[in-house]
Image (cartoon, rainbow, N blue to C red; front, side, top):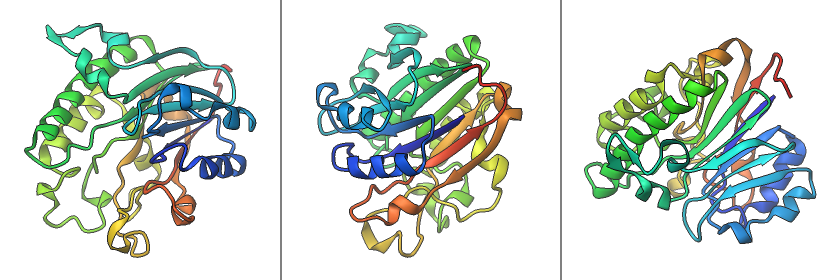
Length: 272
């Protein structure tokens, strides 16, 4: 089973890229983020024409997530409320679902969670506090899913570099959004602290491997990137992980997304 994650930075703008990539890399599920389109306008027909069903949770101009699957998925749901209810630990959380950032579905014996974690804008800002609150609720959301699903893959654009290996020039980045101590601690608590494992790091210990390059300052040409797109897997899938790789190819295409796909391969009996 192959599961890929890719922030496409507008599915309609990058539709030709997505189709081209899927035709060359027929993964079982592609988790896309930042689709930037309402559900009614999602380009389902074009994707169905190449054999992919689309499960979407989108909104105009901003955010949006989708699961593109070669076979029907089961138990698809969107948002935190679908799992946790309107409140979590006594605090209302429905407002967090106003931004379409969470979608999940089951393929065989694996539940796939596709996330678009808030960027946070600037350390200490209101959006930064929103990001930390969002990650706190994510912890309880994933805890609830783990209670019912031994096989869990959590992937997407996390907008956090887990450690300094994941940044082209880490010096001074502790005050930079996506690398601040509070964000890294929140990632540790909400994901790694639950026993989930960074699949990429199971196969690649070295630094200098990135999934996002800023459009500015010729960052891709200089390979001045960050690794902020991740796959996390539950202990029940640890022995089935075959590989996890970053495909830099689409980032070099004309008018690309600023992110590139990351592919997780699982072996063993997927119970499809």
